Length: 271
Image 1 (spheres, rainbow, N blue to C red):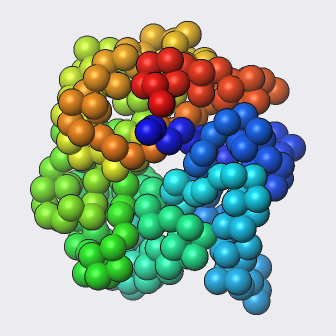
Image 2 (cartoon, rainbow, N blue to C red; image 1 turned 180 degrees about the horizontal axis):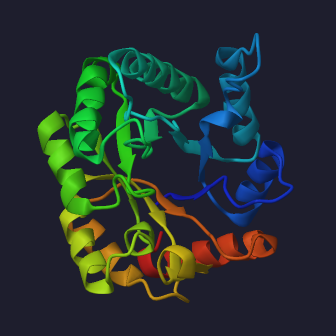
C-alpha cells in the first residue's frame, strides 16, 4: 500500500503542530520537515536531541510519521575545516532524524559561492559523501541528494556522484519540477526521469510552468511537467518509498494545493 506525504513548505502561518494537524486531517500518512523544525542551531543552549522525540510524538498524535528530515547541508566548502564541520553536522542531523522517527535524510550538494570554483563542485560533493559513508552505513541511514538549486540539478551529474561514492545508502531525491526550473527543456526532463529513477530514495511531486524567473508553480496536473512519465519511470525502477506532494503555487492556496496533489497521486498510483 502506497504511503503519501507532504513537505512542510509554503504553509504561511502554520506552526509545525498546525501543519501536522492538517496533514493528518487531509489524509497524508507521512510528512517531511526541515532541520529547523527539530534543531534551532542559532539558539544558545538548544537541545534538539530532546526536541526530536517530541516532534515525533506530535506527528503521531495526528496519525502521521516523518518520511524525511531535510539537512540543509553544504559540501561546497573552501577548506578542510569547513568540510569537517559539515560532515560532523550531517552525522548529527542523521541521529536527530532517527530520534524524530525516520532514517532518511534529504541532503543538498551545496550552494554556489565565490570562494569555491565550479570546477571543484563534483570532487567536493563526492569527498563529503565519502567521508560520511562509514557512519551512514553503520547506522543504516539513507541520504537522498536533491536536484535542487543550480549545483545538482542535472541527473547525469547526480549519477556520476552516486557511482563515485559507491554506496547503496546514497541516492536521489527526485523533484519532478526542479530539472525544468533549472532551465532544461521538457525532453531532457523526461530523459532525466529515466536516468535518475533507479537511484530514487525519496520523491517530491511538483508541477508548474517555465524556468527561473518565468517559473510559476501549479497544482499537480495543471502545469507542463509529464508527471505520468515520472510515475512510470519510478515504478519501472522499483521505487517503493513515500510519494510526496510539494506545492509552489500561491501561498494563500497551500492547503488547497496540497489536497489537490494528494488526490492526483491517489488517482495515478492508487492505494
